[in-house]
Amino acid sequence: MALVKIITGENDSGKTTTAEKIIAECRASGQRAAGFISEAEYIEGKKDAYFIRDITTGRRVAAVSAVNPGNSGWRKYDFSRFWFSDQAFAFSAEIIKGIISDCKSGAGPDLVIVDELGPLELAGQGHFYPVYGLLRNFDNTVCLVIRETVVEEILDKLFVDIKKTEFIRPSS
Image 1 (tube, rainbow, N blue to C red):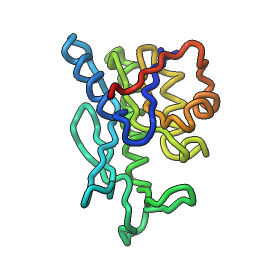
Image 2 (image 1 turned 120 degrees about the vertical axis):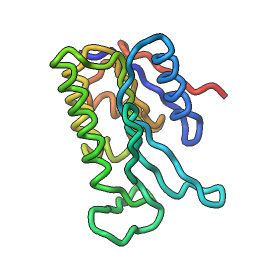
Image 3 (image 1 turned 135 degrees about the horizontal axis):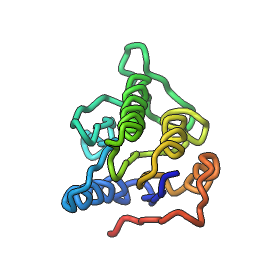
Image 4 (image 1 turned 180 degrees about the vertical axis):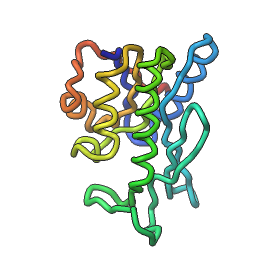
């Protein structure tokens, strides 16, 4: 089972920036990092969209949009003002599936970053099931970025022992 670290904080507190620093430190020490980062895009100072970026390949897929993209495969949930892309969740699931496959062949990374888990995963959707599988099939460090408002509930849902988990808070 994976060693779990949690990056948590309020919205816009620097969680993703902290994850990027951890990736850089991992690589600087000669270790391999994999997983995905959620990158926000802003219009007139307001978050307008998110992209999921594969840490290994750099490939980006549109994940969340403030406006209805007008094509199929996008969903709106009651808890958010954003629209969510089914394709992006399939993309992140494929990243995790590849990591698990690499581990089985002895070529897995030292660190996996999953950015970010929130209300959708709490409802058993989004990244939830791929992350659940990752935690059971990966023996190195998994660093989960989780919104502070749902961190305990998500860890409970994932069956992660909060007492054995290291918490990382973004520095101001």
